[in-house]
Length: 124
Ligand SMILES: [Zn+2]
Image: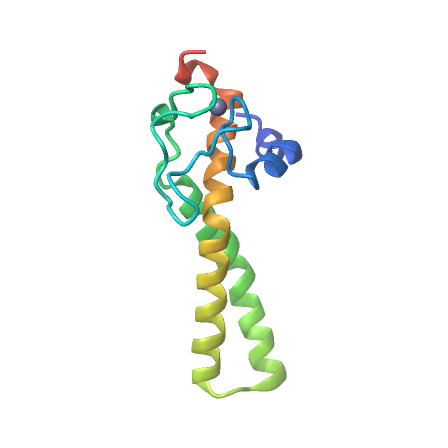
């Protein structure tokens, strides 16, 4: 796999809308707060159940947010030396907000990558 294929900016922009990778119109998820994918796109009938994103988006988030928050926490500690409970509340809340906020777009992005680069998995 070409590593540059993972940084497809246009695909990343499209993923923010959490829409079907084929028609870009139908919703990919069952509801606005649901992480469960629909079986088929309501607009084009695309079979979404054939996706194979598995734990990929969650693992990506762990790597990215972990690499981002650990150095920030160390810098924050060295600058302000707050009590331990401030770290727990601050980094716990930030981690939760960033994870919940970015999991759906990231899952859409991984499914979009799969659709773009392994179209044969979808019978296309
Ligand atoms: Zn569609």
